[in-house]
Length: 104
Image (cartoon, rainbow, N blue to C red; front, side):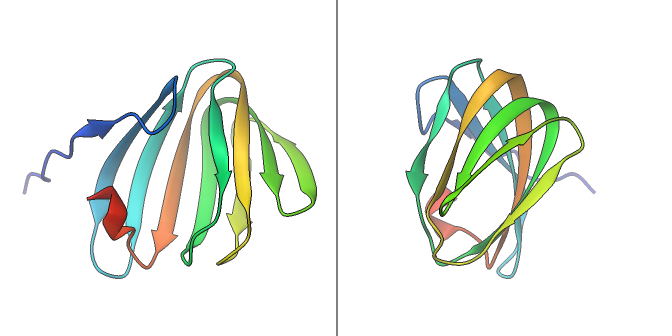
């Protein structure tokens, strides 16, 4: 069974976002970053997990600053302000629960 092709969006300069799979309870999204690109600080009501598939990133989660590389992951609770800076070109795989309808 083939999966639907989701369009690529560019939410920030040097960032490409593409939904990989989704249903009402869960969404999996790829974010590809150029070196130096940032995911702007923001918050949302969804619980988020992020896995570093490639590259190195500096994450800002609430008052924390965390440097993460390939194979690392982080959970961001609902409502917590967060963002990241790409230190080496890479890709993040994010899961959101429930689905981020604003990405569709």
